Length: 151
Image 1 (cartoon, rainbow, N blue to C red):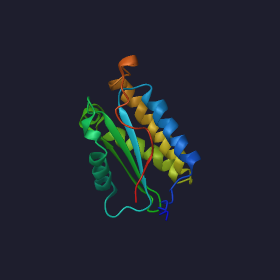
Image 2: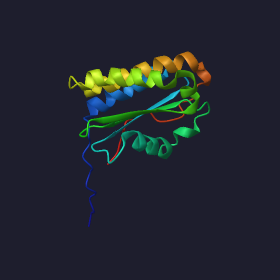
Image 3: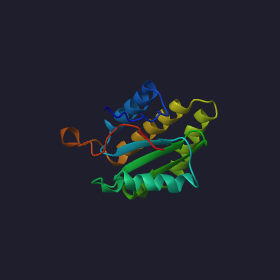
Image 4: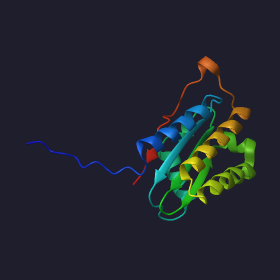
């Protein structure tokens, strides 16, 4: 007798996950920094606190240069948060995160959620490259580039 697992319904189509993954890969080609995107349908409570939970759970505090960045988006709740590890935050401060958030919001308000995430990721990669340039052949991809879909 075969037992079938029920497949969890995805929040995004494969095409949209691929577009975000490609933006992460494009951004990371310029930098030794690491960018992750976590999507959930709903966010219970504060999105920044939820993003911090994912940051820790995904092991983002273990990058060599403490230069990981997490983009968290709760799609149905229309909430999001950005978390940068201490290595990058030390260089950019709160103003940079506000700038990225405003860029993303401008797309979200037009219903262009995927493009908002992509543009946020690309902007983060651009700034990471200033402070943490790519190490060329020695650069390791410390964290997966796949979009993480939560409950």
